[in-house]
Image 1 (spheres, protein in one colour):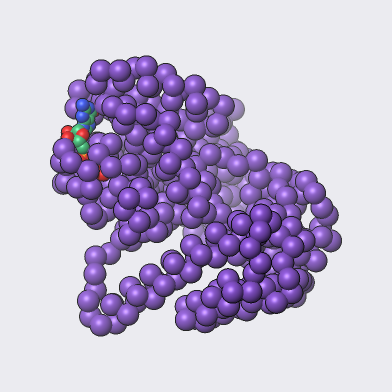
Image 2 (image 1 turned 45 degrees about the horizontal axis):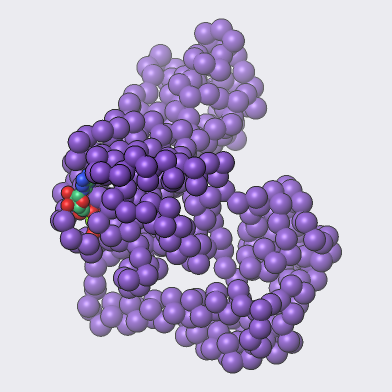
Length: 388
Ligand SMILES: Nc1nc2c(ncn2[C@@H]2O[C@H](COP(=O)(O)OP(=O)(O)OP(=O)(O)O)[C@@H](O)[C@H]2O)c(=O)[nH]1
Ligand SMILES: [Mg+2]
């Protein structure tokens, strides 16, 4: 077993994953921390357990306040538009001014750090669709009270816009933010593999392998889960993963968020040199980077397209039998098929689907008749036919 845990600690973790209430989870984690030996091999697990415990305690505290009628400010923001992007970064990077300029939202801008204390949403127009941007308080170890909430916003969003400022070392800012998010299970650089463990889903452990386990077999995965008394689960594996990655995923869901780095304040002295260093640092990491100056209005008009490309989405317009084409497109992931489009409109439309007609980039000729597996492209118009 990767972490070499004694049976007692393993049993406590099993208890944690079986716990139904926050109170039970807290108790199980406390017992786990007491039972686990401290050495190099358990370092990661300990780090995770302590953080999770802190999060659970905070959540418990928040619930108590709510029950007491305190209410408190809400950090959750309902999604709207084609996609939701959380704008985050270190203090004073220009996040609030950026969101204000791009969306017109009334954010709070100030020349001192920690000026934003609550998330503020606004809509960015890109061609015929809108992206929802959320301005957030600064993400830094200096303001730990915000960290879990901002990470929560990031986990719920479709992507991240990371703002760093070129008036100081941008590489350090980037690495800091990346680390904080990573510690809470959010990745901004695409990992070589991802694991998702969903408990339940019928008897047995089903391993869906769309990649490779580098240091073990499917049987090892079953053994690993059984050691935590998990006998019913679906384990989805994409890309290349290790047994350690799988063990981590049992307790701590790790998600990847496509990320655009905005290097702001390119107008200040020394900014271009610093930008070059950041550019070199990010090369080959599959992360978008754009230099801007919000105050000088430089490159702000490019952001919409960067976001659109990074999200790997397409716009598809539906045509009614009367010939009318919808003005607002369906938003689908790249590679989506005609059947995916039908499903997005209505489950019945997918169920009774017969054929579709296509106009636009993916059509060989206007009005081409296609089956359910036809792959759509951005800008397609589709007329779906179903039997009643
Ligand atoms: N020189 C320069 N200053 C900028 C630029 N963009 C923002 N600023 C200034 O940077 C300061 C901070 O801007 P905010 O938008 O409040 O920064 P923030 O990231 O929201 O800060 P917190 O909410 O405290 O984390 C303000 O004084 C802005 O006027 C820019 O492109 N160039
Ligand atoms: Mg702000």
